[in-house]
Amino acid sequence: MSKITITFEKLKELNKKALIPFITAGDPCPTETVALMNTLVENGADMIELGIPFSDPMADGPVIQRASERALKNKVGIKDTIKLAKDFRETNKNTPLILMGYANPIEAIGVGNFIKLIKDAQIDGVITVDYPPEESKEFVKKLNKEKIDSIFLLSPTTEDDRIKLIAEQASGFLYYVSLKGVTGAANIDIKQVSEKVKNIQKYSDLPVAVGFGVRDPETAKSVSEISDAVVIGSRIVNEIEGSKKNEVISNVKKLMHSIRNAIDSSGVQ
Image (cartoon, rainbow, N blue to C red; front, side, top):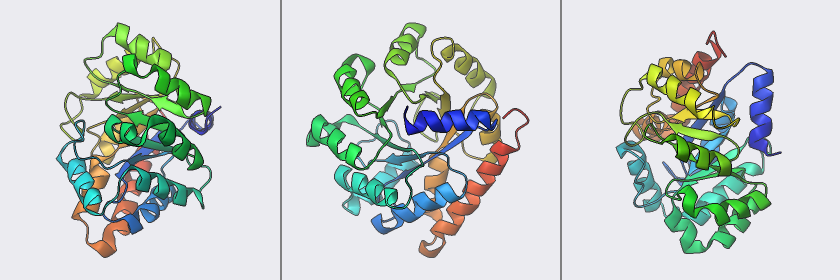
């Protein structure tokens, strides 16, 4: 059983929902990444989604695009991201770590090499935005062999037969993209998201996390009432971008604290 699955089961026993924050490795600088990851955990993160910087992040909006640009200027690539995750693991053995990225960097270093490196770094799950399920079977099989979860995205336009196909390959949880477009794009229609989550649950017993467009405590609370987990990325990255160097950690801490409190105050946890 993976660390991700164990975490969801423990949260269910406590009647709590998972909070999964996203940051880009190397943003605002490589020396801050592990400190930020620790801050996220200390202030309510149940898992961490760590973004691999990439020059063409097609699913990401301007905020996370700029984070990738800053990280790439800091010369942080896929191997550096994995090294930062490994550094985090030196002091935190239990918080599930999920790498989020694109196929190009993985293909560039080779799938076998990638899986070897992330196993060594004790990564628990992988989201590869542009690996469609039809082309992921061998990749998923190799990840499964190393007990690393394959996490797939589902969108508002994903049809039922495709939900079923993805559910057959996925493990850990299913990531529902709450809106059409890129990260941080628009306000969430909670009623519509609720209907979509219920439909996904017809095809899978995996937990459903909802992300893209979660930008404040109120939205996080509403999303937590209709899903198993809340993913928040652009809002955190925006906080990092807009903070003075000596205030990044404290500002992220305040934001995380407010999001965690909002989720935990929900009447339906």
